[in-house]
Every structure is written in structure tokens, then in C-alpha cells.
Length: 198
Image (cartoon, rainbow, N blue to C red; front, side, top):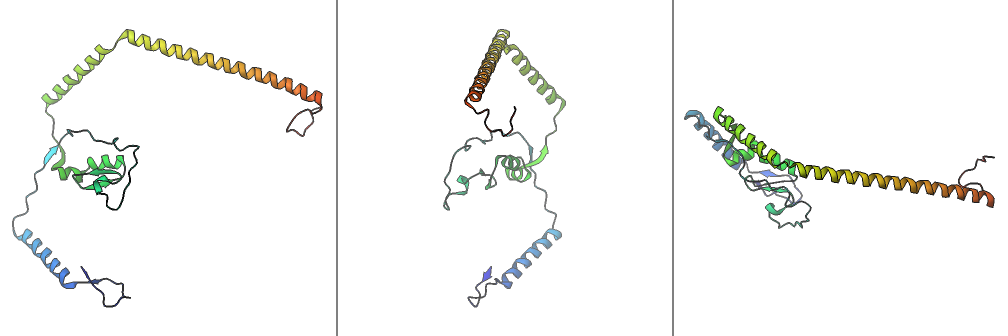
């Protein structure tokens, strides 16, 4: 692109004008061909669909990784997208990238979603209703009562511990009062106060 400079002190880039003129001519001829010929038909892409894999965000969480100059881009810090060949630094941006237009286009999908028919919606409602019924069947009354009893026992233990702590504090206060009386007998009435209470 840039040719070598004549002197060592000249740091300006020198552009090869002939090369760039050829590139400009090539681009102009391509534009003319597009105008003269039939318009380029739009690329037919698939409709957007669900992912059939789970996005792995936690595998590198909390791990240390040594990165050198020779480390391949896929193993560098961050999340690597092998479809777009790019590295994204955090999980939120990685999810934005995966759900974004550029990534979907590289997968061969458009951002349009297939319109659902009435039958498909009814089937989905039936499936969800069956799932809810199964969850209700799994609900066990005895197990729930056992959990409630355990929670009550924990609450009682917590209250007892609080009461014991209050008693300890009250006993410590009494001990401090005894110490104050002893200090007065010995000739010093208190610490840290310059005011006299007599």
C-alpha cells in the first residue's frame, strides 16, 4: 500500500497512486455492471429459529488463564464466537452478539420469525397445561409440612440464641457497674471524660 520513503527522517506515508486508481476503476465498473444488468436478487435466508444447543457461559468462570502473544484467538480471555471469528469480553455482550443481526446472518438466518398458526398455538397451550398438571401432582403435602416444621424449629433456635445474647449483655453491663463502683473507691471516677458529675 505505502511505498518506502526516500529518507530515514521522513515518516509520512507515501501512497501508491496507481494501485488506488486501479481499485477505484474496478469499483466503478462493478457498480456500472450492477446498474446495467438485472438487479442482484436478494439472498433468501431461513426464518429465525430456536437454538438447539445450550450456550456455555460458566465453563471459564473463576478460572485463571495465561495469555501470551502466540495464544490463538479462540483461547484468549473472553467468549469466542467461532461463527463470526471474534472474541467478546463479557457474557452480556456475548449474548447480545449471539442474538444479534450479524451473527444470525452469518448462520444464514434472517431476523424474521415464522408466524404461528392457530393449531400450533393450541398445541403449545396443551403441552404447557400438561406440564403444570405434572408439577401439581408432584406437590407432596407431607413433605411441605415437614419443611414448615423445620423452618419453625430454626426460628425458635434463632430466638433462643437472641435471648441468650441479651442475657449475656445484661450481665456484662452489671459487671461494668461493679467496676465503676470499684474505680470510685480507688479514687478515679471514670475514663475519657473531663467533666465532673459531682
